[in-house]
Length: 349
Image (cartoon, rainbow, N blue to C red; front, side):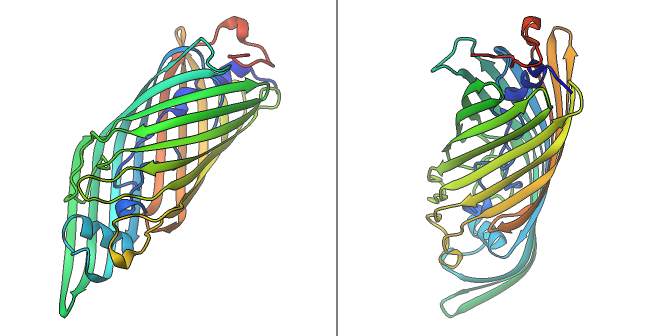
């Protein structure tokens, strides 16, 4: 089967330019990271059509944690002294429903021989968090035990996330470098269980690769990066450096429809600064894996794109784990008909 590669590529950047953060969803401070695993997926490094595009993502997550993650969250909201020795038999449960919007502009003029694109990503939604169980805290000779449930719900806006990508295309091989950041303007209060913002800034840099063969319909993408977190000015806590790898693999059943798998690996590589002594370095880790389905379709003189992907998380350490689903809808300029050939991408160098 041969497919027109411009049809494949034209929505790739808008789909990749969508991310979010929510304290329900994500060790870093309280087990919450700036980077959301699964941010990049299939077609991540493939070129796009120049001009404006708009992407939206409806995101749902349901996660739970116990032990150190639940204890860290109670310390952060002032329920437990940071100097205490803690024995916690409790579970943290969190759910989040958020909508993300990402306007993107892709430049037609090459930069360093590649295609430059810039985005600003915003979010709005609701987060619910609860902790239930028994906590025993000891400070010197004083021992206190408390049982019960703490719960909190928040509806509001998230931080702003600027994203810059630079991509190069060489036949079936596509390469990308990116820079990503967090502007901490979202709803955040260190005394709350639920937050949509993270309360501090950060930067993330990385690189990616996409193999895309229009003749066979086979695609594979992988993107790796590192996150540097700035200190939270409210809590004087600084999360460590994180490494992450997102990937996606798909097969085009036709020019418009593809199916495949997605996954991620996330590992914190340096200790947090400011964690309670009993938490140690509080490094976090998680893996995720699941299915995806994508569909490309015309909307007048524009191009539409729908993508569904879901992840089941496992092997988590010092952060919640559970499952999450993403439903992406994006619209962009359609590729010029003169570029629609079986062997050329929409953007050629």
